[in-house]
Image 1 (tube, rainbow, N blue to C red):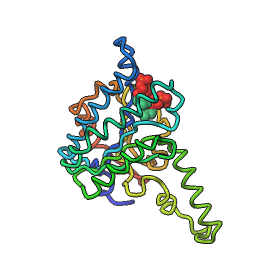
Image 2 (image 1 turned 90 degrees about the vertical axis):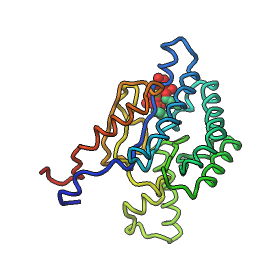
Image 3 (image 1 turned 45 degrees about the vertical axis):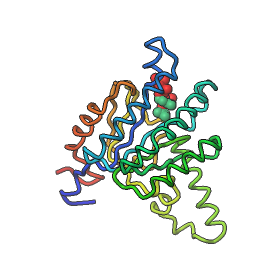
Image 4 (image 1 turned 90 degrees about the horizontal axis):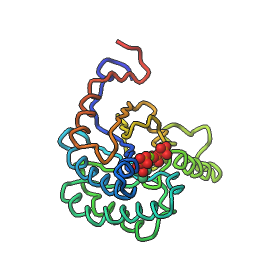
Length: 241
Ligand code: IPE
Ligand code: IPE
Ligand code: MG
């Protein structure tokens, strides 16, 4: 990348680490699952807003490969919330021109959920008003491990020479092969860490850490964060002006 016009870019792809549901509920003396349910409502508002503020790709971290470590009841409650979200939202998402896709390892999810995910992807495949990607049982290290395995199989069977492996060929084997890299990654709840989200894809992403807990993160605050980012100077390794 070189030249002044490349130093700033529109916010085409925003990814969000939706954190803080548990604390939101605990502070109110409520079960953690109530926080997760509230969080799902925030997803609706933000999805609706994205096309109005020029965001073409929205990627949401819903469940990490490490989240299985939580209590069985919380995991089961989250899985049931994901099923209900798909059942309830499918029609509206499709009517609004949202294309939904999922990233992450599906093999560990239950059959019913896997089928719902596949049918939502299929139903919305022709839409292009907004590309919504939901990361479910997603981990950046797991994704890279699966990609390396596939590349190693291709190499072992002579379909690719190790010397021909490029950044593009690695990108092709990632779950995100159809996505541009995220321009901006937002994490709510005040934690300032990546927690295994989009490790490869975030090489040049901007980060914004906001103290708001996810169930309190309104579409208005989201729009403010996105607007604040638009002026940042992204150099992609080139010298500053
Ligand atoms: C994020 O909220 C949702 C998931 C990880 C599924 P948390 O449940 O992590 O909320 P805190 O961090 O405990 O407050
Ligand atoms: C990251 O949040 C995963 C999701 C938001 C789905 P966590 O709450 O699981 O992350 P840690 O444990 O604080 O790093
Ligand atoms: Mg958390």
